[in-house]
Amino acid sequence: MWPQLGTGCYTNVLLCRRSLLAAALDKRHRGAAQADSNIRHLSRCKALVYTNHGDPAHVIQLQNVDLPPLGPKDVLVKILAAPINPSDINMIQGTYAILPDLPAIGGNEGVAQVVEVGGQVTSLQKGDWVIPRDAGLGTWRTAAVLDEEDVISVPGDIPLLAAATLGVNPCTAFRMLVDFEHLEPGDSVIQNAANSGVGQALIQIAAARGINTINVLRDRPEFTQLSDRLKALGASHVIKEDALRRPEMKELFKMCPKPKLALNAVGGKSAIELLRHLRIGGSMVTYGGMSRQPVTVPVSALIFKDVKVCGFWVTQWKRQHSIGAFRSMLDELCSLIRQGKLSAPACAEVALGDYRQALDAAMQPFTSAKQILIT
Ligand SMILES: NC(=O)c1ccc[n+]([C@@H]2O[C@H](COP(=O)([O-])OP(=O)(O)OC[C@H]3O[C@@H](n4cnc5c(N)ncnc54)[C@H](OP(=O)(O)O)[C@@H]3O)[C@@H](O)[C@H]2O)c1
Image 1 (cartoon, protein in one colour):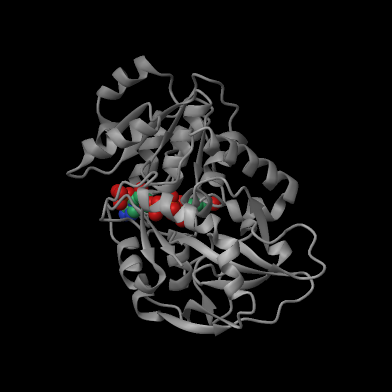
Image 2: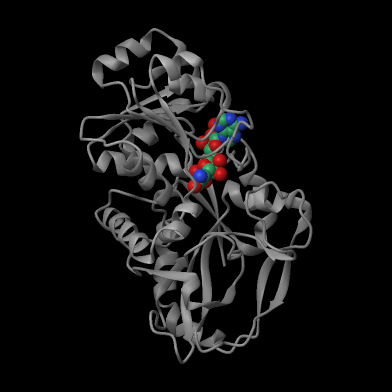
C-alpha cells in the first residue's frame, strides 16, 4: 500500500479557479522584483517550523529563521504562495515515505521569485519565478537561500495559483495519463477522489486530449454543485461511489468505452470498485491512500481480466528523470494553462500568519478547496 495516507480533505468550498484576489496577487507579484529589492540583504525570514512530529496544529510554530549567506551558486528567493498538500501533513505527522531532519520547515511545493543571484549562477536571473525540483524544500516561509539546482524556472505569465500548484498534482496527473496505458482520443479513464487537486488536473489534461473521464466522488449534500463544477472543467461523467455497484453503470458504458486506466487515491472498497469496471488488460495505478485502507485485488480481476496493479510516486519520477524531461512536461502543462485548458484547483488563499486556520481546513473532510499559504 502507498505510504501517504488519508489526510487533507476540506470543508470550506471556495470556488476560486481564477479569483479576483488571485488576479490582484498576480499583479502585485509581477511587480515584486522591484519591491523585493527591500529583502535583498535579508538575514532572516518567517517560517512555519516543526521540531517534533505530531498533530500539525500542535507542532507547527511561526518562527523567525536565520538565512544563510548567499553562496556563489545560490539564489535568494521570496516565496509567493505555497499549498498545503496531504503529503505535507503526513510529513509533519511523521508518516510519510521521506522525512526531513528536525527541526524542519513545512511544505514541499510553491512558487517563489528570485530576488538575488550568486556570482556563478547561470540558469536563473532576478525576477524569475521558480518551483522546487524535489520534495523536502520547506516552502512554508517568506524567503529562502537555495542552490540554483534546487529549483526550476516557470514562466512568470501564468496565474500565481497555477504556478504554486504546478509541480506536484498536475505533474502526477500528466505522468499517470501518459506512462501506463496508450490512450487515444475517445478512450476512458476512471478515477476516485476526482475532486482532489490531482483529480481536477487529470480531468483537464484528459479533456484537452479528447479522453473521457469517469469521476467518482464521495456523496455529500452539495454533490450536484461539485459535479457541475467538475463537468465545467471537462469531466465526462461524475458519479457517486455507490453508483459503481449499480446497474446504471451499464447505461454509462453505452456512452463511453470501459476504461483502460483506473487511478486510485483512496484504497479500500473504492479501489475494488474501480477494478470492477476496468477493461480486460487495463491498469490500476494507486497514487494515494486517503481512506487508510489497503488495496485488495480480487483474484478474478487478476486471472480473468489480467489487470495490471501498480503504483506511482511523482517524487521518484523526478529523481529518476533528467531536468530536461521535467522541463518538457512543465512546458506542456504551462502551454495548457496559457490556453485556458488547465487551471489551479479550487482553493482558499490564506495569509501565512493564519496558518492554524489553513492547517485545520486542510485536515477536514469534504472541503474540495486546496489551502494556499500566501506570504
Ligand atoms: N503518488 C504521488 O506522486 C502523489 C502526488 C500527488 C498527490 N498524491 C496523493 O494523492 C492524494 C490526493 O492529493 P491532492 O493534493 O490531490 O488532494 P486534495 O486536493 O487535498 O484532496 C483530497 C482528496 O481526498 C479525498 N479524501 C479525503 N479523505 C478521504 C477518505 N477518507 N476517503 C475517500 N476520499 C477521501 C477528498 O475527497 P472528499 O471531498 O470526499 O473529502 C479529496 O478528493 C493524496 O493521498 C496525496 O498524498 C500522490
